Length: 119
Image 1 (cartoon, rainbow, N blue to C red):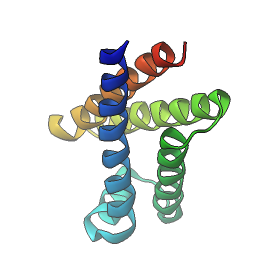
Image 2: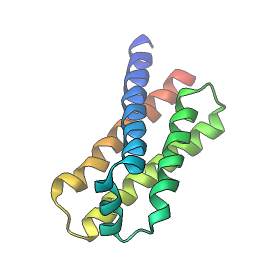
Image 3: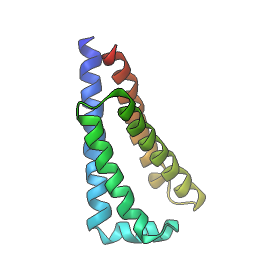
């Protein structure tokens, strides 16, 4: 059980850092604005996604109820899968396609161990 607990917090912590940095970059980096334009998303979506990611991080790290954590995990999963599909649809470089899948693996590990820690 202790190993599962450590894996949960390490994967959740890495996920939180990645999403916090991502949200920060969405708001502050001009290259992210260009990336969203390249993907064909409206300008306001970048800000909405940054706010949603920050809220998701708070929910994952705070002692929130299981239902709201499930929604945060689902929201992140949709985000990563959608990012992979968007980059693939535009034939972006493999590195841009694989990035969301790597973070998805962290999310799945966090999610699976969350349920083991919870019970």
